[in-house]
Image 1 (cartoon, rainbow, N blue to C red):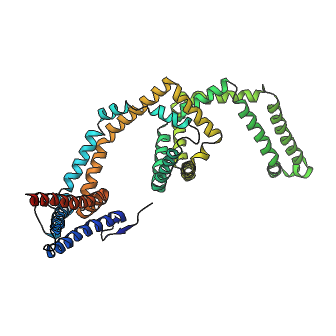
Image 2 (tube, one colour):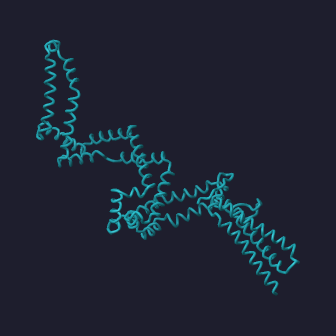
Length: 421
């Protein structure tokens, strides 16, 4: 159950549990003070009252001492500038540097990362997770899915989408697409996979011709002389042109060895060669690629692509059991089984993950360290005090409670020894 929190003056919040423990610790101290005063007033009534007084007195001293110690960590007790108090606010820069150094020395050194990653079987763990039945590790799956969904929702969609779009654009700009197109076209021609493309072009041309017969007739009529129009020869000429083109397209569609098809194949072969070896063609393709990438329609398509991918990832994260059903689930289970039993594949993936982690530590470790140090340094004293105090939570207040009770027990023992002597 989530605890409610109360906002403080600087925008931070105090968890309800922490606030309750503060009241308990302070109330116990006040109770001990009241008990001490009452026992001191009635000390003469019975010798046993002395034990109560000794317990309350020592408990009060112990509680006050621990209250002072706990308070001195975060602020000046009672607002008095006592030396060696308000330790955390005065040393926040050093704390940030120490925390950053701890991260660097224990987590972000490439050698340390490599040594720890060598002990992890990431591929095997992923394989077991993917191959497990739907009912196994349900809590782990749901927890991981909820975490993934929360992370996706927490990221700024516009900013993250812009980063994704920029990355895709950079990759497309860096890709030398002309040789790839040439190689793909050469392979298609060699395996006769270009024939359906030519057939499609011919069918498309036939449909265009059929849909635009009136335009051809109008053009012939406009360009024909008055004699041809008077005799009706313009209509005959237009019919001949249309019939000739239609017969030509029909012959090309039916005859795979038609001379015009052979010319088209020669043109495709020359285009494939130029795409791979002609510098001018490569530059033209690069210019066309850059124009397409910068086109607003392409940018909108990339935005929609990211939004669709994000929505799909959110659907999978929110309902992992549904995502693991059907063909996708079967494919993931087969992948998990392969990862568990294919030693070479598992070793390859683990090596890749280890090298990736080591590379990230080497490339970004110093940046992460600086980020931590500069972030802590940028906090004001009140912010870091409140955040650390809330992070430690109720434990500091338990120290006050324990100090009060332990002090009382020590005072009780001392009084018992004093009485016995």
